[in-house]
Image 1 (cartoon, rainbow, N blue to C red):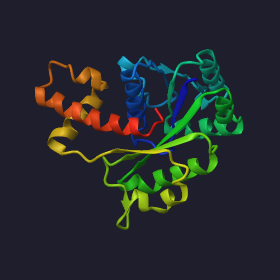
Image 2: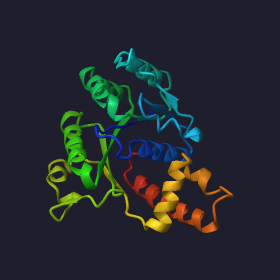
Image 3: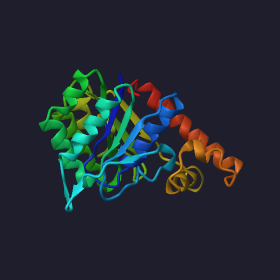
Image 4: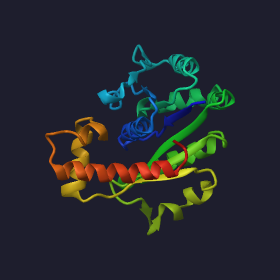
Length: 242
């Protein structure tokens, strides 16, 4: 059966749509065509990736989130039992979607149907470290232990550390390390070369596959993006969750 990827984190602006796009690109590169869903009613960043053919799920009714709209998502999964899904979730609808998934036993139901369910969450450095760690802790505590959990460490705003301790030394990891199926790190990049090329690609909402054949980019621009893709995809393959 298929893999259902949910990207969940209550903190906004930490890279959820980036991660959704990377998962979709990884699937495509390995011969799969995932069904991509953007449930963010405010910032439709995932939808902006034209090459990924992302479907926008309209969950707003009279400026409020209608949880019954999520039924459409589950029906869609049921109608495509062999297709992988990548479901991005914005901060504005994280609470209602998470409540829907938990209160309706949706995760367990999908696993009972034979799907692999993978929860992806983001931990960032900088000012959002505490909030994203708290989000990881909540997901690990509340979601079924037999669904998979992948942690993405986004170092764009700084290293993932506290009081000189790395992520693997932090209490949240020690408490849930048996629960975490994989860790993928978006590593620090040299600002005037690798990071600049990566940010330009993201700003243009291009996939790696589009960027590395873009004739407007120099040979070295494309080489650096190829190297970034290789490092990320090698980590993603090593999790065995994709």
